[in-house]
Amino acid sequence: MSLISILKRKNRKSLFTTPSHDGKLCIYHKFYQWYRSDISEVDAYNPEEALEKAEAKAAQIYGTKSTDFLINGSSSGIIAAVLTACKRGEKLLIWDKSHPCHRNAGMLTGTEIVEYELPFNEEWGVFEGLNNIEALLDKHSPKAIIVTSPSYEGIVSDIPKISEACKKRGVYLIVDEAHGALYPFSDELPESAVKYADFTVQSLHKTAGGINPTALLHCNCELDTKSALKMITTTSPSYPMLSTIEANINYLNSKKGRKKIAELISEIKKIKSELTNLDFYGDDITKILVKKHGLSGFKLSEIFFDKFNIEDERTNEKSTMLLTGLGTTKEKLRSLLRLKRI
Ligand SMILES: Cc1ncc(COP(=O)(O)O)c(C=O)c1O
Image (cartoon, rainbow, N blue to C red; front, side):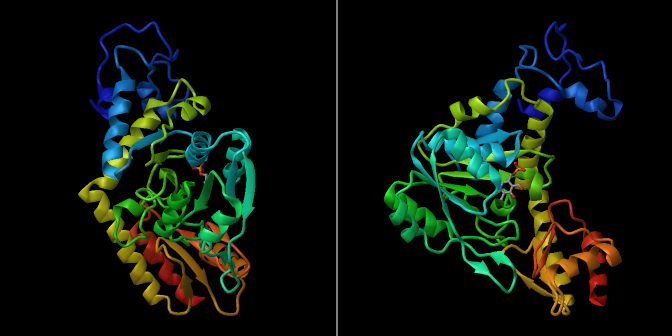
């Protein structure tokens, strides 16, 4: 039975167990349904078995050895991957501008952290992908390397090539694909790292329509992520959140979900082709990285906010980025045509 159907099931037992709200005392009424679905590991529901099955089904969908559902974001997936791949004192390579969870993962594991730099694109104010993997691995001989792909702004690295170089040298590859959770479900987006990397982490909440902070940890090597996850995860998980992950993956993998991603991409293509007064860049069309000749990224961001009521996701000296995702409607995208007036 799926997690979703377990939470729908009417329980006939009288539960003298946690949680103490008992599914009836609803202290904050806005979340009434949440309280009703918030169960513990009681025999009457047996949600652990349903979770195991849901994760096994997800592994089949993604083509991985294992896929873990995370309810503490990609941050926890990165930490679990490093705890799994490395031991105290072993070398971990991280990008010097990486998300803080990369360094935290190395520190919690007790690794020797070595930072690498990425080429900087002066014209757009963003970092490019990793292009010197062999030299980097040969110089440092790490146990594992974390590569962020895509970057926040949608720049991807050549993961198949990086994976080959890592495999040749027995280095574990951990890919932070937090911003690429849609990739396995569209041929028009960059190829996902899921099949190449030893560990891939994706945030469902960032682009794939998931609620904060749902995420996935995919493993495609001989190691087992379970004991690391146990070390950093509560023993009282939120089954409502976990069931949204199950539903989220089912949706992404469905005809309807794939069609929705295709429509999002096709609409962005149209909008971009009409906004001839602006320049665009990046490998991932869903992250609209934009600049305007003669304006700084910060000025453009200010104009978006003050004159068009648009808040962007991230801005630098040269460009700014509008993030779109599964929930971005056609109407919202079409409203960007107003930007012709800039
Ligand atoms: C590149 C990158 N990796 C990891 C994370 C952490 O993701 P989460 O918020 O799901 O923990 C973020 C969050 O912004 C990110 O930008």
